[in-house]
Length: 127
Image 1 (cartoon, helix red, strand yellow):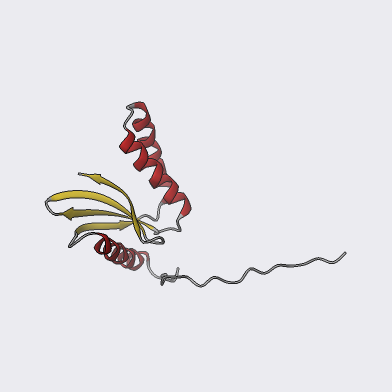
Image 2 (cartoon, one colour):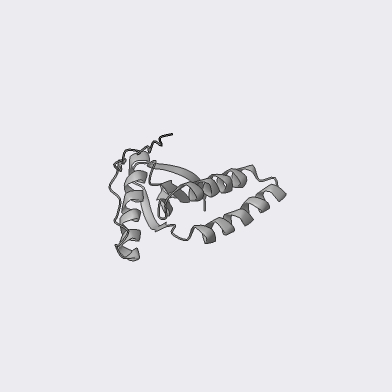
């Protein structure tokens, strides 16, 4: 009986990714710039006040599991959808693939979470 070894072709990343040896601060800055460019693709002149890439997935997830439970308890469907979306994203994405941004759109402040791999804003909350 012969055995067959299947080799999957190496997939080239569709977007430039930072090498893992870069210092964390530099990787955070690069990912924040990516998130800002993604927001600029979707909104006219967004003013990004702060952008923070999520590298601590367990800490982020524990905070959002708590918020998901609170949303269920209070029947807050907007918060439930946001928490569920963010929990799924942080589970699916590589470290730093999710960026939390505080953005000024017009005269309103928003928290917007950006999936840098799919290049989409995936959740938002008015502040």
